[in-house]
Length: 224
Image (tube, rainbow, N blue to C red; front, side, top):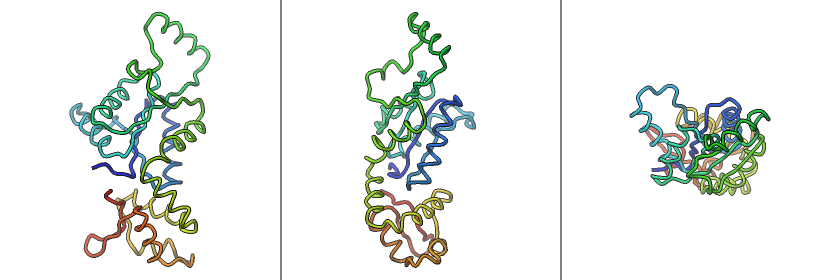
C-alpha cells in the first residue's frame, strides 16, 4: 500500500544536481508533513536486492520525482519501474550547463552520440529548471500541492494556522522514529496555551495522523 505522505526522488549523483535534491528534501520536510526518500544505491551491493529495494520504495510512495538530466541509467531504470507498476511520477530536467559543456554536447548530438534526456521520454511533460528556487517552486506548485495528503495539509493550515508550527515539529519526530508519543506532544505544546487533546483531534480529523492508544500506542502517519 502506498504511503500517502511519502515522495520518492531519483536523480543522478552529479554534485550540481544532487545538491538541489538534498536541499529540496530538507526544505520540504521542514515546511510540510511530507517524507522525502532520496534513492541511495551506494550502500547496496547485491543487484537483485537493489532492484527489489528500489521497486518497493517506488511502490510505497504516493508520488515520484525523477531527474532525467543526461539520461542517467539508474534513473532510467527507476522511471521504467514506476511506469510499469504503474506509479505517479514527475520528470525534471536541469538545463544550466557550462558553455564548454553545451558546445561539446551539441557536437555529440549532431553525431547521434548524446541525448539530453531519455529518448523514450522526449515528448513527456516535464519541469525544466536552471536554479534551485525554480525547481522547488515548480515541484511544489505543479505537483506536490495536488497530492491528496497535501490537500489535507493545506486545508488544515487554513483552519488551524496557530497549530502549524507545532504540527511540523510533531511530523519531524514521526519521520525520525516512525512515531511520537503523547508526552512529547505535551512537551511541544508546553507554554503555548494549546490543549494537546484539541491539537491531536484536529490533526486526526484532518487525516494527517493516526492516534493509537494502549500497548504500542502513539501518534503515527495515517495508513491511508
